[in-house]
Amino acid sequence: MENLARKDPAPNSVRVGQVLETATRLFTERGYEAASIRDLAAELAIRPSSLYHHFPGKQNILFTICFGMQRDFNAEVMPHLAAGRTPEEAIRGTIRQHILFSQRRKGEVLVNIRERRSLPPKLLARVNELRRQYRDAVADVIADGHRQGVFRLTQPKLAAMAILDMANGQALWFKPRDRRDLDRLADSYAQAAVVLLGGWVPVP
Amino acid sequence: MENLARKDPAPNSVRVGQVLETATRLFTERGYEAASIRDLAAELAIRPSSLYHHFPGKQNILFTICFGMQRDFNAEVMPHLAAGRTPEEAIRGTIRQHILFSQRRKGEVLVNIRERRSLPPKLLARVNELRRQYRDAVADVIADGHRQGVFRLTQPKLAAMAILDMANGQALWFKPRDRRDLDRLADSYAQAAVVLLGGWVPVP
DNA sequence: TGGCGGCGATCGAACGATCGTTAGGGAGGG
DNA sequence: CCCTCCCTAACGATCGTTCGATCGCCGCCA
Figure 1 (cartoon, each protein chain N blue to C red):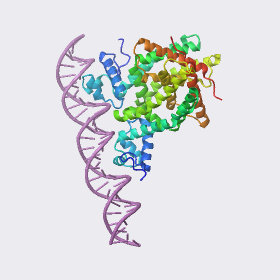
Figure 2: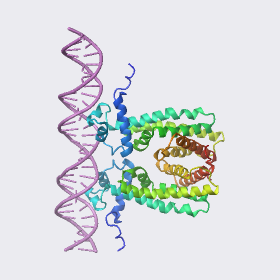
Figure 3: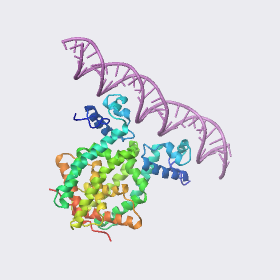
Figure 4: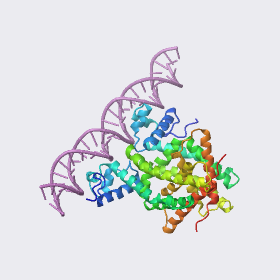
């Protein structure tokens, strides 16, 4: 009587998790369009048709990865936007958590960044809506800091995009040697974001 | 006797230019894998087989777009790394030009960023080599600034990546209303890069 | 307790569509 | 006459997906 909410996608079985894991790896390695259902089935040592018992189709697998990742991301990172007392502390904690999450679940993050566009418009919109919520929340905190005089800049939304592009970019190339290395990157980027917001004087 | 250097790809005819233009647009709209040779031919109002008179194959069209774009980019942007007297001026001019180029030839830039990975390893390596040259040159100037004490940071290469991720990101979302708008963004980002490099104090 | 029905999970086989590419021929201008 | 450019036609491969049968486990009921 507990897990009856959804019927079609993801009956939370072990296999569903295996499919999502393997699909995430395949999609990052070859791209969504280039990775075929048959490739995915072969890696799972089952027949292609068996996949359709767990998922209604290929697009739904991609959606489950992207939406699930973004949902978890928002739930984990966005609280840091309100937790800190000052806007500076809020941004610092958010960017730090943003990077830690991105590295911890790098596969899903990469799929979401690079393959999201292959979703049909309706499903894509649902993922983008979550991303917009996060982006707007960051921009709001930046605007707060601007009103309080801590941040010096002209366009809060532009500053938010610049910082988020920076924070997203590292997922594509950074490979931490150990936990210390990762912590250093997270702190560095958090610091960079604050410095950038504090010293970004307007251009005449 | 002038244009005999290359025989297979791009005999510099009008059609070749049309193909590259249309392919760039199609690849940005649908992605390389999802855009078919038949789609491309249909938009050009010719038959699919006719394309093979101008290009040896689909991958070569993608390569021509990516490599040509990155070659022009390096030729246009990299001189700014040596032009300025101070590292600060060099970075400022480079980032500014980086953004102006990205917006002027946004289609090719987007294809290079998002679809490059679909190239076979050998062709991909040739494009990545050009990108590596640019990235290393930026990192060298940052390291110079660090030695001179103008930039305060721990890892020049990490700082270079952060700045370049920021500069590359805008191509995905920024749509300038006019030339003034574009100039403002370019100057803002150039300023942001300098501020970031100057104030990026090391994390203990 | 032992047979049995039901059901989740997987299977083999195939569908129609679309893919990149090739072969070979024809029109037209230098 | 040859070379550039485009055509029609088709090749073999691979794509996502569907259909219907089968396997094995689990609980119910005689």
